[in-house]
Image 1 (spheres, rainbow, N blue to C red):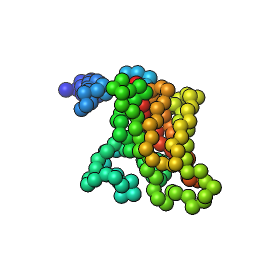
Image 2: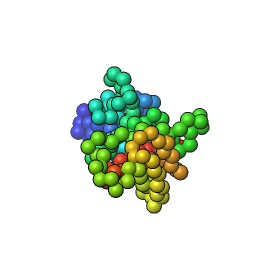
Image 3: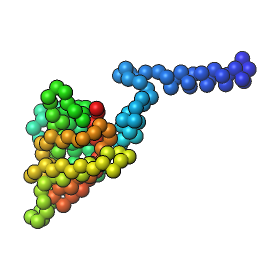
Length: 167
């Protein structure tokens, strides 16, 4: 086979690889703006065991979906995964926020409330949610599907994370 034939064969293999399905049966390429946004999103849902500082109330080698803040000081344990903009089954977007004990401020004037300022990726759409008493159980809903950048503030500390909400 000549060099032109090998080049044609190599290009065909690359093109076919780009058209195959993923192991979960989904399309290998994004098919909508929401999928494109989600694929560019830095959200990294893990199902590994929670760190020791975040596993109170869980037994054994609990493997629940969770996302760490960029600094690693807070983790969002996702009881509803995937998170959804609208949950038709009547369930909630329940998230348990767990902060490392070292991130609890000794300053009595620092508000304990977890303040979440969420911004939809690529837009000016911003919403604010609060978890009274600081990191703990919450229901966090957003008005639109897509990738949301969460700026988190609690007890004098800050962190960020991205969460994807499906339609």
